[in-house]
Image (cartoon, rainbow, N blue to C red):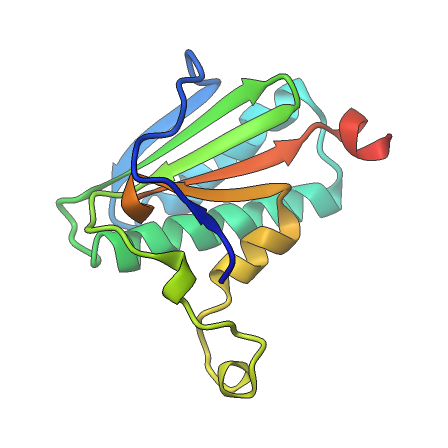
Length: 152
């Protein structure tokens, strides 16, 4: 899939608006709800925006748990949400080996359409305003434009 990857860490953004660090999937839904509530407290989200954000966070965090950390209950997932001038930046980092999203098959091919998985990056690209990987694929950065910028 066509997604940018940078070897180094993402650029510094200062103090995060929301932060969570957890192992495994037991806290995933709670963390997603807290992160969405923290954004909505600053910039109200419509039902569609909230649904899309929940879908993207669920997909990205589950990938970090399952693929990045190989479901190892001792490895952590970190979620950071930053307020940036253009809107929001969401970072999801795992403790895995990393990966090259360019090697992920396109799920829109005839072979991909018949698979039960493999649509995560496509979902992220469709429902956010930017998808980029850092740290060799261990840190995902999603960009979300503020509602005011999208409406212009």
